[in-house]
Image 1 (cartoon, rainbow, N blue to C red):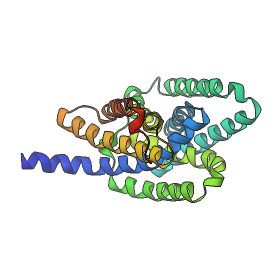
Image 2: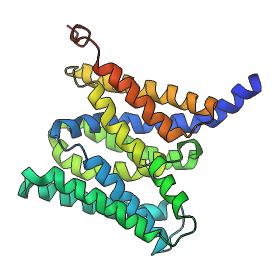
Image 3: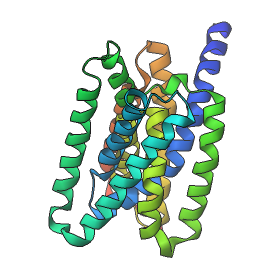
Length: 255
């Protein structure tokens, strides 16, 4: 039993660290997405970043690692600037156009991987992620960008509109490579919904509680039950976010 516990701990340690990093930044960004009412921007940016990864590997023949990050962040930044422009020009159609961008990016990925014998596996990896297989080097490199982004977000609240469209594509691009498209969307939106009835600082604290609790429980269950970690974490986030949203109003405010 002790050997099993040691193996589980060794397997979960990098995944837990990556999950904590992602949650730390995704919770406040997700609450900003919810406040702006552009719910699918994170899913669209994540899919566009994934398209950049696929283009880098299939057309540019770049290797794994940070070389893949360059086309991915290029596409994600392009998508973010496009959405910022749409917010000013056609705000009434922005959400619909964001949805169109998501579908277009997803379709292009399928076309590019249509003749790849490992295409199905690649798509599954991009969508569901491989959080259990992240390594410490990848975590260390990503942590530097996340720490700088989180610091800027909380120290410059008056610049958050500019920061949102600048930081968001960078963060989402890195997160897609760590945890996959599905978990990126879930970790941004679900804790924000679960803590939406909180006010002020309690809303941020509630989002963090939901996200960190789902991370620990979901990873533990996925390892013990031998289930895919990404989808299991999405389900854990959904369950705890739903529970948070159902709490009585009197428990949601603190004086």
